[in-house]
Image (cartoon, rainbow, N blue to C red; front, side, top):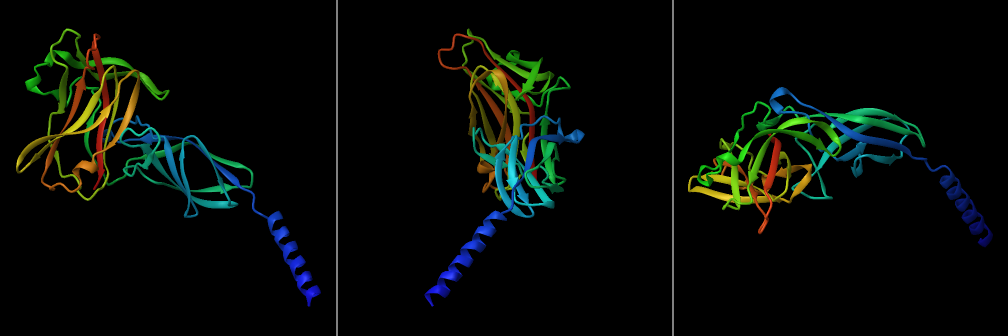
Length: 295
């Protein structure tokens, strides 16, 4: 009986060893970057889509910063789905799916230890993405205006400047330039959207404000909320100084708008602050504003 048990154990060990020898070798999926295509009413194709969420044959592979190499245990044709991700609300490391853009759904062929690559992942805004506000200042006008009570109309205008975002999209652009002189008595001023916007979803659906900023001082994005009981200013997010390079922000406004009455309307306010005891001129550039949500 003992001999029989020993023989069975040896057979099982041998089979397990064979299984290990036959373990599948991984293939690799290399993803480099996104290539955004837009319609004329959606604004330009500038973006900072720096992360991906990937499924292979409906199996969740994970979330990854770009560029990335993802090991996959698959051979031959496989269904691959790719969702763009962004650093939301100023986070330096936490990616969230950018649901207002399409999910890439394609078939790729894989071979063990070989790399299958997509160098420029094609992406666009979804057909049901409502584009509420676009402002790139290219027509020399502006739908972002000073609050009249600040009396600072001579401190902001559309100016031509160099633009580069994360080493890409290098070109000369028109942007809204704002300035507070060191001798000015005021320490801040507001730039607000010309119009109120309404009809936003209040169920938690992402409401994404995109914008690019470069400047020596703090910029705060807030909401001027108009309801049946009056108006109220709600500060939302602060952008810290970036005097030497452009930064792009994806701000999800749903955290404020969700749960509010559906009849509310909103103006969006960029407040420029000069840092306390700053002897220098405070200079801020804003560009490429886009506000979207899914209908």
